[in-house]
Length: 273
Image (cartoon, rainbow, N blue to C red; front, side, top):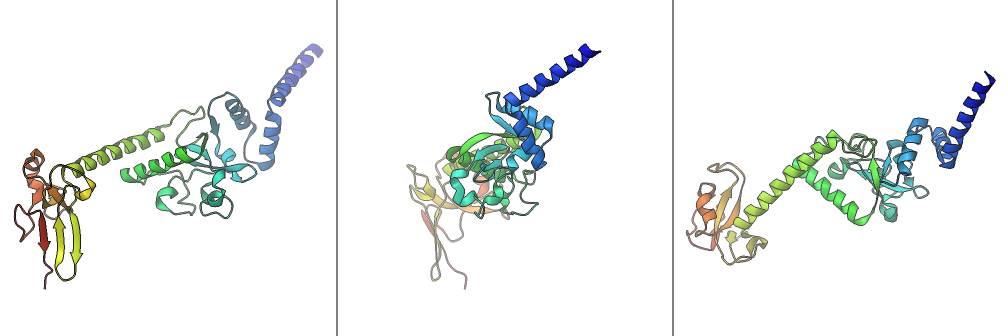
């Protein structure tokens, strides 16, 4: 019976020494004082931090990084960055201080800094808005220090992506495809130069550089509709090469401006009186 007690005591001492030698005891005491983490979280994430790979933060750990003493950290789409060098913007009293110590991905797009806006739930965003949020993520990757991942909506405890992360990536992929299609269309049908004058009306004209697209043809102004034959759909002025295959394939989406010559590179729409 006595031997059994000594064995248990020895085992307990070994566990305490293991935790103390890796700094876990102080970490546990700190979190217990702050009432932010339980012991299991501390041990798990302490092991993760010492594993040599990217750190996986808990939400409670991230909340500690809202001041210069601990560093200013923020998370966007589950990725954590040290933005301390941007103290002017992210420090206490700074315009973007509300972003620190949390993942407030939604607010990067909505600009709403209330409790509902400062959230990592971006399910309400459109594909284009998700693309804009990803642009923010690339900005932080390029300008600030990447610290790891945030355990929660987008990453699991081991740092692997969650189902929510994959949903965001699917939206992002669709947005990029849509953007690529728009850029392709802009190359096929560049924007016209447009000028409005109170006396003469609106002038549309095409050059070899109009719409920011340099090419070896000028084109003529045409109305380009979003949907074939949909006169009520959104439209814009496009410079069209009447000798191109693109013109032949998209005739149903193109229309001449009233009162303009068919082959004129410049068109004037007079003001109605």
